[in-house]
Image (cartoon, rainbow, N blue to C red; front, top):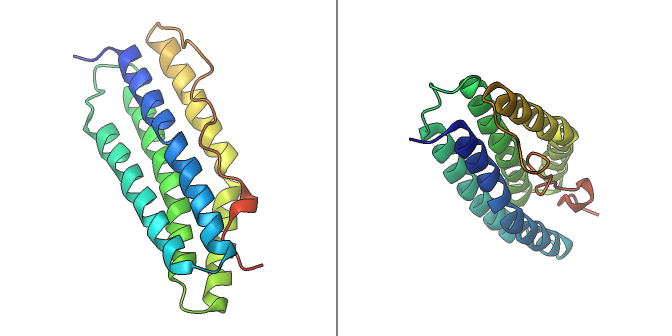
Length: 159
């Protein structure tokens, strides 16, 4: 049986485990986009979508019913991972776009998604802090370091 603290740590570990793959994927996508290799933008994005889906499945499989605020924390954690997954869906749409007009539309959609990033991260941090308080444990570090921020300059929009 997992304790509330172990659950919180597990969510943080999953979040942190994405930092390096996100960094590598962002760099790869930027290189592909800069050389207009949109097919590989889509391939790289699809890999990240799948990796993030594994995290979502893991979070959803954990029974949190015995923790105070467990369902709320779980819902917010799933939404956090889904948010990052939606960014890679947007990248994939840019990569799969049949022409320049479609690519610009997909790129604009991605920029709209990026606007919500800080809010999504803060919501998870706040929820994790509340979960810790409700279950009587202290978070060792700042909750969920912002390892997974994706910068707007790295979008694959045509230059």
